[in-house]
Image (cartoon, rainbow over all chains, first blue to last red; front, side):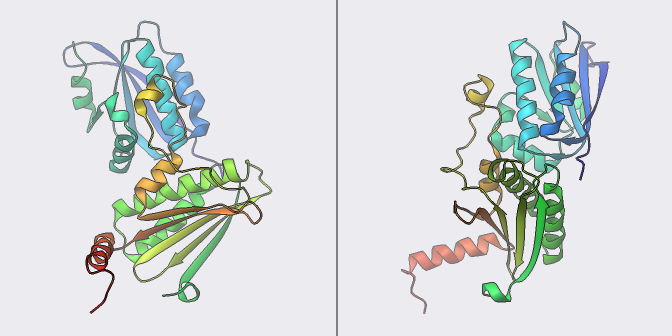
Length: 121
Length: 162
């Protein structure tokens, strides 16, 4: 049985105050097989990227190995001085992210407009 | 209801990542038929998926010739799931992940599976048996609060029944 391969689409958008935001839109499963999609895509972002928005609204299955990849992305972003906001997680995964403490390092927003607005100008 | 009168479903999964979803979806169907709410079903799905992944990775070392056994046992008020592998079982208990230590790379980003299992089900035990294989046993209850109240009542009257 194949896992649903993680797909990721990178989009450049702006917040309501006009600041540029790089959105990583994931679909499929996020598991140990998602390293290229999660970390590889992050590493390929343009130099100078400052604001990253993670969109999980197309993700149905996310396990602890997948969460570990998200944490690794956040570690790398923190080292680079980038700000990460998150939205689109299903209620169960909001609970799981909260349980493991990720909410200390990123805010889990209910929708994209709220998440975009959370980036300071 | 004793073990023999419980309704059982048994699965044998190859030790290949991705197959945990078979156990996860089977358990979700059973739990739905038993009347569990969607939130509890999501908890159960994550707990079973993590137990199967542990069994495949750590118990069976991803050797696809070794099976992970999953046994679902239903009774009137609870669903018990046992996940068997051929390993010697986990060492110690699940520590809560320390996100600060992870973010500062003082501990690995992984290693949250057992913690999630323990947090999401009503009862869990890890049975280590190097000779015959090991298993994780998880239970979710339809009415966990009533069960907890019954335990409190039992303790408060010294376990005596009127």
